[in-house]
Image (tube, rainbow, N blue to C red; front, side, top):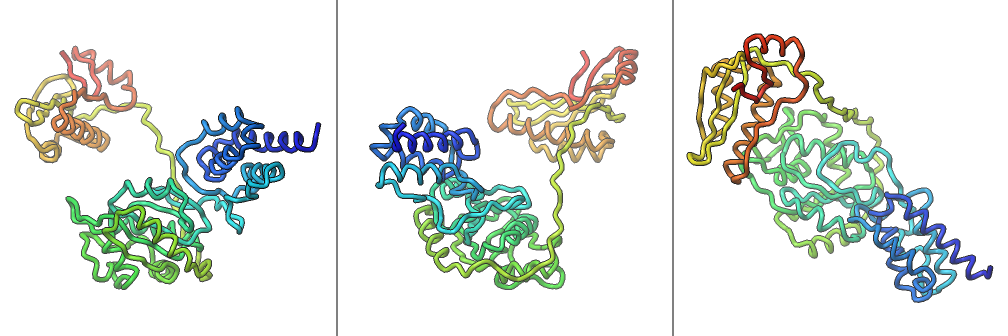
Length: 388
């Protein structure tokens, strides 16, 4: 085997390692390397089938570089440079080795992580589509991008996630900051927090949103957040091209990682919810929901657990129906109330969209003792199913 063929074999081995790792399929390192190798006349002629297979693995890019201990695409690209000098060694990766921070961000949310060691975070407020438009391309300096819809818990989540990464030194606000139905102004409130802080009651000073209170973070963390992060307020801007330029210009002024020591913020573990295994019927009875398209309203029938219809309500507004059911004492279990709320929402969606509505049965299995009691009365049912 010649030296050149040995080099091509090494290149193939590294590339296959990357192809076998699903995390690489959505990584900029892998995608840029494959594109670079396909652009090399010599490499593409040596491994055409393999490069085509690699390209077919591409998924929507979620990050530029994960900073893996061994980056197979980068190694492959360096090897390729031995065969073809036009292939730049390590052309994609940053000059400083990126770092994958396990457990960051600490809280889940509607965001995309791009690179832990980058200095710019972007909040798109109520313009969700900007998350995809800005995270799928390669933007130098972008660390994380996400939306924000409330000026209380939403801001608290944002503070926790950004404080957990000392590399983030700038926060760009963009997108639409609309009050919507319940009067939230997350962008104006977040900008006021960074400019003025909170008062002794935890209210964001000069915020105009409906509930601008920070209740789950004490002043130490709010002060640290205000010192770590510099606000770049471009609220209302939705042009991706302009925002890409702004992110890169902002990143060029990176002062370096924030050095102020803080006690670790108590983390709230994310727990897996458990589906119910048994269904307990509400002693107060059950409901049948019927969206009446001809009158554009919802009919709610209440039955005793013996299958006897005893109340009928109608309204166009689901809230009127569940409030009436509660006020009339027709619900005695919280799971029944949650079930009814879900079904009324589905019925309302059916009225608006014209889709067929079929009432779901409640989650869990009915117990034998309940079946026996209902069979004795000539009726077997689960919540949401009527007896004929």
